[in-house]
Amino acid sequence: MKKSKNIILGSIIVVVIIIIVIIAVLLNLVRKNAHLFTDETEYGMEANLVQKVSTVQNRNNYYTVKDIVESYYYDLTQFNINIEDEFIYEPTQEEIDMVSKSLEKETMAYKQRIYNCLNNEYIRKNNITLDNIEAKLGSYNDVIVLIDNIYFMDIEETYQVYFAYGKVIEKSNSRRDQFAMMITIDSQKSIFEIYPDGYGYNVEPGKELKVDKRELAHNIYNKYEYKLVSEEEYCVSVINDYKNRIIYDIQSAYNKLNQEYRQAKFESEIDFRQYVQNNYYELVNINLNSYKRKKEGDYTRYVFIDSTNNNYIFKENAPMSYDVILDTYTIELPEFTEKYDKSNAREKVILNLNKFMQSINDKDYKYAYSLLADGFKANNFKTQTDFENYIKTNFFENNNFEYKEFGDEANTYYTYEIKITDKTGNDTREVTKTFIMLLNEGTNFELSFNI
Image (cartoon, rainbow, N blue to C red; front, side, top):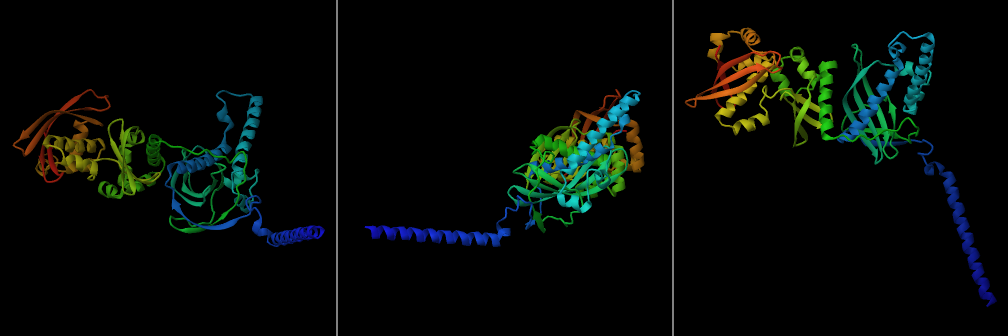
C-alpha cells in the first residue's frame, strides 16, 4: 500500500515538473517574440494594411465626415475674431482689455481643439505647436466649404479612412483654397483625427492603397457625432449646395450641369454665366416645396419643385455626387415624354405652351424663338433680337399663364386664349393673347400668337 502511494506521488511530481518545463518554454518563446504579441494598439504601433478605395455610398457616413471637415474650417475662422466687432458702442480701454483677454482665451481654446484633432505624424512632420498652429495651418474669415468628393477605405469594421476633396472659399473676397483632407475614424469609440493636407496618397475609386493603421488617441476634443440625415434634409442640402456653387464657385456649378443638357442649352461657360446673371435672384432663392424620388439602375433621380412650381432635376450617383438639369423644356425628359404620349390634344397644347412660358421666364429667348413657326417669324420677328425686344415690352419679367378658352380647328391647328399676368404681383396689368399651335410628329410643334 505504501509502495502504491509512492508511485502515485512520484507520478504527480513528474507531471508537475513537465508542466513547469512547458510553461518555461512558452515564456521563453514569448520573450524572444515579444513584438509579435505586443498589444500594438495600446502602444500606438502601426500595421500596414492594403485596402481598396471606394466612393462613399452611405449618406449618414458622408454627412458625418462633411461635418468634421466643415467644423475644422469653422475653427480656423475663430483665429480672426476682430475685437471691434464685439462692441456696438465706443468702449472704454478697460472694457477693451477685458474683452481682449477673453478673446485670447477663446482663440486658444480653438487652437487646442484643432491641435488635439490633428494626426500625430502631421504634427511631427510640420513641427506644429499651439504657439505656431495659426502660422502653420492658416486662418480664414467667414467661409463656405464646398466638398466635391469623399472617398473611403474600410480598414476594419470599426476603423475607416476617408479622403475629402473640395474648396474653402471666403465669402467676402475671391480667396479660395483647394483642400485634400484625410480623416481617420474609430467608429467604435466615436473619435477621429485629421491629416489636413499633403498626406501623399494618390486616391481614386478602385485603387488599392497601403495604409498605416494605429490606435487613435482619445481626448475631449476629437469626439464626433454620427449624423442621421432624413430624405427631406438631404434634398434641401443638395439644393443649398448647388445654390452655393452658383454664388461662390460658378465654374463648378457649370461643371455640375448634366452633359446633354449643358450642350443643348449653353454654347460655353460664358453663356451659362449670362444665364445665371439673368436669373440670379430666382436661382439663389430656390426653396424646396416638394420633391419626387425615383431609383433608376445605379442612380437616383430627384425632381425638386420650388414654391413657384419650377422643376429642377438632380441625378445622384452617390451622396452629393450629382448632375443637374435646371428646366424641363431644353431636352426631352422621361417625365415629360411619358406624360405627353398619354395626353389628348388639349393637354399636349398646354404642355407645349408651358415650355414657351418657362423659357421666356428664364430669359432663354433663343429657345423660345426656336418654337415659333417659320412663317410667323418671317412676318413679325425676322431676328431673335426683334422677338426679344417684343417680349420685354409686351410681357412681364416673370409671367403667369392662365388658360381660358381652347379651340380645335379641324384637328390640325389648335388655339388657346391665355390671360398673362405678372407672377410677382407687382404689375397689375393683364395681357390677353391667343396662341395658335400646330402639333407635329412626336413632341414637335409650331407656335404663333396674335401681335
